[in-house]
Structures are given as structure tokens and as C-alpha cells.
Length: 473
Image (tube, rainbow, N blue to C red; front, side):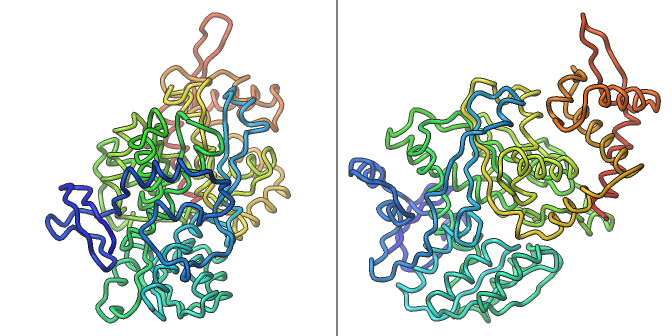
């Protein structure tokens, strides 16, 4: 029996099967973890050597059915360089690329395939935009279970290649993951064990272990920055911290900070109360962050609740800053992250400017997956190394303009831009600023000895146009 509780009406249920909607009000169900389980879990002496050390806080699964590829217990690394650049004293990176298939989804896959085995299923179904499908395929392959992956047209080719390598059957459905996820409810798949993350609450249970690990590794934290697609990962981490707080293992739940790309930011738009207009023009969304490209996020309302309850924020970042941040992150911290993960790095400057995070707070950026799964990242970095002439100049100006756009009303000064960009000299920064000012894309304002730069309306339009070109090409 699995103990569920409705996140909407708070009614509890004990059911034999996987259920994701409340029988009473149709709200989203998640697994009810008794407070005593968490307390007993911490009362026992544990070394936390593997993911299954957390089995006491999962629904009960017979030891004989446990499946593992060595997932979990991933490193949480203190920043070596970026923390100094941003003057954040306690900046950490939770590096989920160390999982067997190079993403955080291996945590969910281990739990789901173990549960499928315990119920004697011989085939599983997963609809996703990449990482969960690749993970499920790997763990199913290990156990000789047949796997069917429903995927959208827009998917990172590296993740699709993993599915093929793990001998999964693949069926394409729609341009975006929303259509593939809907297809997973087709009655013709009723004999499959459901591994689609939106439809299996055990996914949340597997992913919440990240919260437990963080507390074990670095103690209490002030905030965690998380990329959002469906919102499920943010909800998972929030649930984990809520359980820790309720069992008095921590004094507070850290700020949940959710990040999306400006190309596709439905959760951020709802957070900012921006009404999205569905038109023919945005029916084709072009983004490098395919791992979080979702038009109608399943966990949107719960994610927003988590953000508001913890005094966090939802924000959207430009695509070019996401890509340049991935490059900078690899060169300065030695972690090659997929675009969605790099959003957490790109968000740091904006969060500091808006004082959502403070320089003396302990902040964790969640690195969800590896850039090795996204070949165009490799191509982009390779091409950038060869870029010269006008292309390089425009690329630098775009980065500077993007940094200024994040500075809000106060603006930003030249030496601060130098700190954030790192690889370009201060004289070159000021030359670019002069040229941007001459084009009326930015304006300057003197305040004491400092000169602050802010973006103009014309600059915003130019930046938006360049963002569109990047997304298209």
C-alpha cells in the first residue's frame, strides 16, 4: 500500500496502485511521508554511501527488488572562482552529472524500476523530453524490462541516443513534451508500468533525496536555485525540505528560486502575472534548453506555492546568457552543464541585483545534467573558439547589453561588467559601452565617482531581436 495525501484538499488515501490525481477533488497527489520515519531515519547512524540508504523515507519496497546503478550521493562542491567574482561567500554546486546516466533523473528511475519489479511488471512506459526517458531506459535495460519512450520532436539528440543505446523502443509524439505526456494516458498503454514523471508520484520521492543529501553534506542553506520545466524538480526539493523541517532536522525551509529561459517561461509569467498570448507565432518555440521546454507545466501551481511560501522568486534568463554561462561555468568550475543547468548560474547576477540572495548567504545552484548530452553545446563552444571579426564583436556587445538589462533601475558600472564577463579587458569593456551609448542602446548616469549604465527601450528591442535570431539559428 502507498500512503498518499492530496496537495489540494489534504485528504489521505492508501492505495495499491500508482495514482497521481486525488479521487476526491482531482488535485495532485504525492506520497505522505510520516514524520516519525524521517526522525527515525536521522536517529540511526548512517554513512550515506548510496541512494538506497534513503529507503526508510520511501514507500516500502522489498529489498529483493531493489535496482541500482550507483545513483545518488553526488558531490556538492564549493565554488572556486565564480563565488569570488560575484562576492558570494558560500556558493555551492550540487553536481548531478555524476549520476550513472549523467542526470538527476537516475534517482527517480532507480525507485520507479524497483517498484515496477516489485509489482511484477515486464514493461514500462515513459513520456518525457529526455533525461527521465534516458534514465528509465537504462534501469529497465539492467533488469531486462521492456521500455517504451514517448518523446517529442524537440529533444536533445544525446538523450535520444542514450535511449537507443539502452535498447528502448522509441515513439515520437508531437513537437513538445506536452503532447507526448498526454499520449502516455492512452488506454492502450494500460498494461505498462507508468514512469512518466507527471503521472508517478514516486518520481518526487526519488528526487527529494537531493534535499536530504544537501543537509548531510553542507548543513542548512539559505536558498537553492533550480531550473524549471514542469516544476517537478523544484516541488521535489521543496517537499524534501518540508519533511526535514517538520521532523525538526532543520530550522527553516530555504528559498526556492526557480529559473526558466525567456524563450519559454510559463511559470515565471504566471508568477509575474503576465498573461501569455497563444498565437501562431509562439506555437513554434525555439530554445536551446530543450530539457525544460514545456508549454503547460504540470506542477506549475505547486511550484509557485513553494516559491511564495519560502520567499523565493521565479525568474527568466536570456538564452545567450544561459549559453555563455555554460561556457564560463565549465572553464571556471570544471563542470560541463547542459543549458537548463547553466540557467542557475546565469541567474546569480540578477538575484544579487534584486537582493533576492545576499552575499553572506549559503546558496546552492543545482546542476541537473551534463552538457555532453547536448551536442549543439559542443558545436557552439567549438564555433565560438573560431569566431573572429564582426561576429565576435556582436557576441561581446550582446553579452554586455544582456548584463546591463539585468541591472534593473539602478544600472551597472563598467568594472562590475568586467567582473561578470571575466575574459575581456576593462578598456575593451568601456569601448563597447561607448559604442552602445552612441547607438542609443544604453544611457549613462554619474553617481559620485561611479558611472552607471542602464538599457534604453531601443536597447531592449535590439536585445529581443538578437535573442530571437539566436533561438532560430
